[in-house]
Amino acid sequence: MSVRESLVDWWSEAVWWDYVIALGLVSGHVAVARAAGRGDWLSWIDSEQRVSL
Image (cartoon, rainbow, N blue to C red; front, side, top):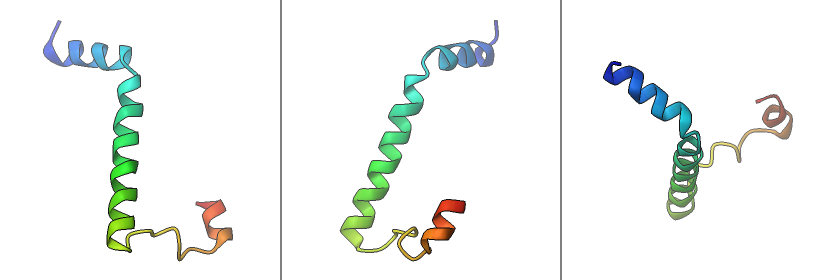
């Protein structure tokens, strides 16, 4: 088994890593947006556009 195949097997068995990474990225974005006072790109989009997005 190659390194790539073993890595893919390990990653597919440990799906919870996806949640950890997503939570880290979203938390980091929220922290930066709140600290800097900008970066919240959803605030200027109309509610109709948010639904379609």
